[in-house]
Amino acid sequence: MRLNILNNGYKFGTKVLFSIIKAVSGYPLPDAARLVFYRPDFYGTPAKKFTQKAMRGPSSWSVADRELMAAFVSNINACTFCVKAHSATSTIAYGNRAKVNQVLANLETAPVEAPLRATLAMLGKLTREHTVNADDIRTVMAAGVTPQQVEDALAVCFAFNVTNRLADAFGFFVPSADAFEAGAKYLIKRGYS
Image (cartoon, rainbow, N blue to C red; front, side, top):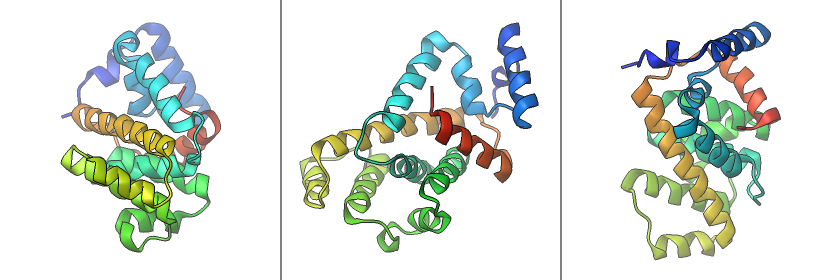
């Protein structure tokens, strides 16, 4: 059920900003962005900072890899909005739509390197079962993933398990493919801050 707060729960200045964004981009501000403007002190500002660090902070995972992780976690959670948003962003970052689609369709046969495959499998287990153990971490590290990469991937997983639940709880509107592509270009250029 879509909560009406995403439509009108903002101060006048914020509503003007939303109108300017729509006029310039040709698309309404996505609900994920609208949510961070609602009660920014409680959720918006901390969520933006954490997500920016997880998705664009220093990491040996590429932006494309982290966006793929976000899409993969979102796919497991069946969060349509986030799957489409982060598939589009990962596709632009990789320059390879087929790769992204193949990972989401079947990780085992997808054309990804062993470290990323093992990491995605771990994130999948964590998302489905809400737990990982030392053996899971050892398996990922045996595939060539560093402890810092594990930590970075877990941050992405956390960010999108939270965002997926909020997207579904608030009933985020799922726009057109063109709107997702425009949003993906923005995320590639500007990040999450």
